[in-house]
Length: 255
Image (cartoon, rainbow, N blue to C red; front, side, top):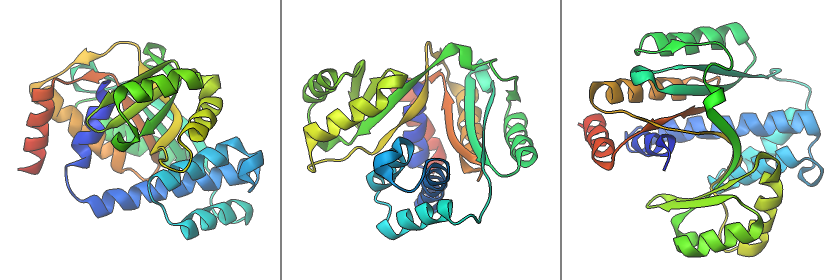
């Protein structure tokens, strides 16, 4: 798997799960509000909202929270969010892409720049990192959705480009333009028996950079700080960890 999934797994095991879950719900709510405001409150006529609601349900977000976020987008109140992408380099020369939704671009830029600089990284210009990534669709299903072979067969039949599986779940990749159609085909295939944990466009690295030791520890700290910022929606990187190094970082973070 690409490095970002292992980082996510490490960060998930770091503890403070109530805080992490609260931050996740906040991001999901923000995305629903933005989608509702931009394309209307009807998910049948608003593909972005439909995916946002699907993601929220996949994370067991309460229906009342989802509806409040939709209503907020239609209420005319609240903040006007701007979507901004930041790119830079972390310890070990790892490329990092940060997607933010913010009502204050100056605040977001300052906090993200500080997260980079205080943790051995540096923020670069737009395009300085993303040329080494592809923007693709990613659909994540839980382990109980089936075996790796079953998922691969269902994914290819649905029109996906690739599918990978590990102990944490199944990761299905699509062309950028095919995300919605593949998602719909898989939803029809699985019915109500299982729902995806996440369906969205991501930045997938074309090549990865092996990282270990002190550089890996510093990078994890930087990614964790970025992940905790209110304006940040998603963080992607092109690091590659061995299983042994990933386990070391888990042990280090919980000791």
